[in-house]
Length: 627
Image 1: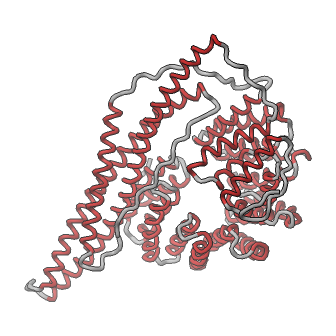
Image 2 (image 1 turned 90 degrees about the vertical axis):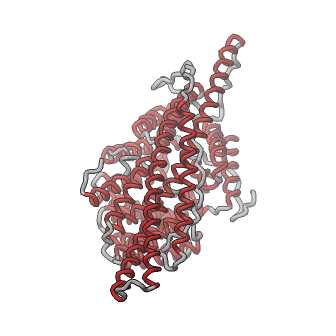
Image 3 (image 1 turned 180 degrees about the horizontal axis):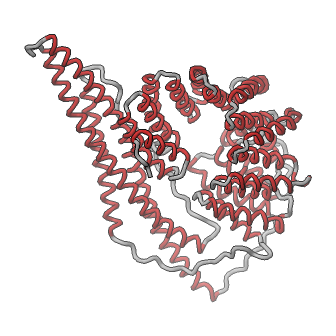
């Protein structure tokens, strides 16, 4: 029994084979290094503490569990390496007797050397393309952030100019001769403000142009990277390249608050000088890489592909492993049709190799249904999950049934049958109340799903009742500061607002922001998300100026912490456009929406829900059809 730094000592590992013992030890080490408790992990990976304990105690886990645990416990710079290690350990645990491949014969060495030389050449060119693309992405991100800074600056300069114009007109009425020193100073401030507003607009157009150029070049490089990666994958199907994370965006040294002193226009001028230097630097990056890409690469060396058949009869372990790798790769690239096909093939073939009660088989069927549902066919996902539920027997265990029914309830809502979803979750809640002593969080998760099903089906008052009682029970069982309580309080506040009490929702979010900042930190993502909802419901309660001011501060924090392409930053900017529209500044709303829609398409996809909503917003503001 080993000791833990963050909680009770680990129990003995009871594994079915030495490989599974090594896997459990590896996963425990990652948990220890992170310093997280099982309760914290339960919230991070959406799994009950008892299930986590079972897997860490030696039971062979699912692929989804090990991937989620590595993501939750390993720092980003080490994550890819740890993920590779854990996937190998999982494979070894599932297949303890692995055949040894025969050594290559001497006659094949020349061909091996030729392939290796081709791989080295491809790796060099792929590395160069990735480096160029990373530079372009960083340039595009900086330009995107600069666009938002300049939009805010223009907005405040317009307000300053309007105030100065009003002040000038008032002074002219009181001093018709125009000899007043105050009037002269006001006219001088107005002239400088209008000059800087024109300059800011010029820099804004320049930043947009550089962002567009960088994104177009990055897309060209992506096509080249895809081609190079495909060539490499044909030789080495067990590995695939993942694009490196982009560096964090530099923080802009600026102050875009409303001018209140004469010296404020000097700060604006300094900020514009900074904007010009950023535009100049990013222009150099774009032009340099554009020139480099203007010299075409030599033709790609053709490599004899390794062809994997659509089906192997009988299936082999290597074939299943390749299918799983390809399915996960398809999911990463959002190719849901291909991912669903491969998960279905895995579910059909795996029982012949791993046995019918292998824990991953039900997961494959669930993933197949998930891919079908996410591709726009929720009714078909419901049929698939229903068939999977009917196929379960005692060998799968009760947890499999709960997992399938939970997913079934989720897709029933999207399939237009919210009443069935509510019935499923009500049954699950009723059946699992007795399990509270073994797994305190299990029934709570299901009751939370019930509240979500009620909210999604429009039964907001019932959702509020479910969430209110759930929070009371969770506080009694878990204390006030459990992370899951914070999440449920967010759901309660949103349901309260949608039920018609915008002021109540705003007050709930104001308290939740303070508590989340205290528990998780002022700049934790959950705190930032709750701040965004606070801005939304502050605006919907009628206080548009306060909401606009809060959104300005929030966006500055999000750009610095999350980056301009993060979903939450994009949603914050869309909410800024909505507030501007409601305040009567339709032109400002149009400017913001025109800036973020291309970024949403690039980051989220053209058919993503958030992208479509932003297009609807722009269509409403302009009265034009948006493609």
